[in-house]
Amino acid sequence: MERLYHDRHIPDDFSLADDMVKRIRDGSLKLNPTDASGWYDFQTWALEALVVPDRMAENVRLRMNDRYREQLDELFKSILSLTREVHVKQLHIADAASARSDWPLVVHIGPELTVEPTRTYYQRRAQGYAFVRRALDFVGPLHTMRRMTPAGPVTRSLDEEIEEMGALFHGAAAVAGSELGLEAATAPEAGQFREWAKAPDITGDTRMTVPVFFDRGRGKTKVWTILGWATRLLIVSFATPPTAHIVMGRPQIRFTRTVRQIAYPVFAEAYVTRLLDRDQFRAHRDRYKTRTQILQHLSDAAERNS
Image 1 (cartoon, rainbow, N blue to C red):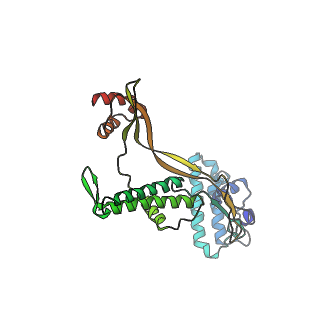
Image 2 (cartoon, rainbow, N blue to C red):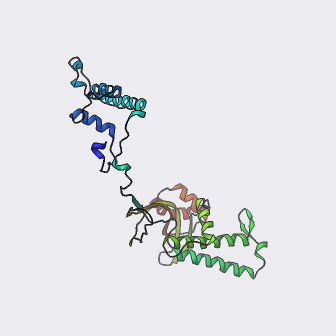
Image 3 (tube, rainbow, N blue to C red):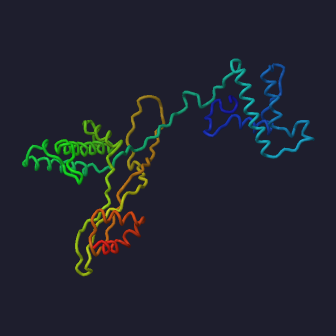
C-alpha cells in the first residue's frame, strides 16, 4: 500500500486483496521469505500456491476449471485475512493517501425542495381562509359551529379547522420562501407544516367530474375531471449557483441536482351527453383503468346512468 498509494488518492473501486492476486500472478509482488522473514511471512508465502497453482509442482497431475480457480482465490483472501488477524499486533498499518488529512474534501450541494415552489399560491390560499373566518364571524361564534359531512357533523369546531388550514398554508408559504432563498422560515407555522407534511391527510377520494359549459352545437356538456393520482420525477438544479462561505478547511464545492418523486392529480377535459355524480363516476373509473378507456367510455356511462 505504501509503495502503490502512499502519496496518491486511492480509487473508489480499489480492492487490496484483488490487487494482490493480480500482482502475484504477473510477478510484480514476490512473497518469497528473506533472511529477515518470520512466521507470518512464511504463512503468506504458502498461500501463493492457491493463487498460481499452475506454477506448482503438482500442476502436472491437476486440471482445474475457472470456477475452482475462483474458489482458490477466495480461499487465499480468507486465509490471508485470518492469518493477519492472528498477527495484527505485530504488523505495520500502512498510511495511504485516503487517510491523509490534507486530501481535499468534496462537498455536494443540491437544492432543497420539499414543497412545490409556488409561494404566492400558498399565501393566497391562507388569505382565502382568513376571508372565510371573517364572513362566518357575522353568522355566530365559530367555536359553536361544526362542518357537516355525509356521516354527520365533525367533532372539531370550525374555529379550530379554519385556524389549522390557514396555518398550514402560511407554513407552506414560509417553507417555500426559505427553500427559494427569499427569507428564513422562522414562523411557528413552518414547523407545524413540516410536521403535517410527514403524514399528510390524503385519504380522501378526489376522483370527480364537474361541468364547465354546455355546447349547443354538439348537444353535449364539457366537463373537467380528475381521474386519480400519478407520480413523476422532478429534477431540480441551480440556474444560478448560490454563494458558499467556507468557515473551516478547504473543501471542494460541487453543485448538484436534486431528484424528487412528486404526486399530482391526473386532469382531463371531455364532452358528455349526461352528467355523472361522484359515486357514478368513481364506479366508472374503477371499471376502466387507463386514461384512454375512461374518457372513451365516459359518455356511454352517462347514458347508462341517465
